[in-house]
Image (tube, rainbow, N blue to C red):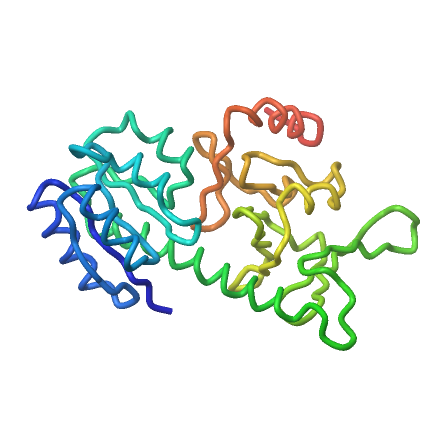
Length: 262
């Protein structure tokens, strides 16, 4: 998959730097660069793109204002010298927020996040298009819990993914990531997560509360699989799952009730 993108910044040196980063990233295609939100807005009406790398503080239309004018299918990565905009940036559902000076490593990580979002959406769209095929009666993303011999005790979950129902053993789930109307179920021993078209809240209601707990508006974890917690982040291999303020007390209360602390 190739993402069409533009760079928007009122600082010429910042534009040059981001342009060079885009050119060295194989899955990005630069379609234009703009020195203001106003000029970019006009061009993007005529020729929409997938991804925008945009400064926040600009004369005329700011990056934050521009982000609210974009179609839902266009994603944005903010670049700015001011960390105070971080919270507001995530409120408008930015893919990422990069502080200047931006290194290529940080830029690439943000671009890969955007690529993952578009790949996820493409897979979910493909799954949705299969609805109505002969023999398919499940709604896209519908999850059904498989029961064990003991009534009411679930051992696995059936999830609609792509063109099939896939059974996932609950004991193998590490964590679940929510992204708008999609979820990514990260399974122990699997290189890639299982992707399904459903909300995180819908899936949360299907999971046994004594085994899974929400730690962030975008994450559910299985505490029995946790090996390390570092600075309010849960570590799964190379992945760090944040424990947000709203869920922190409930999470540590859960741990206190199910584990021995020394």
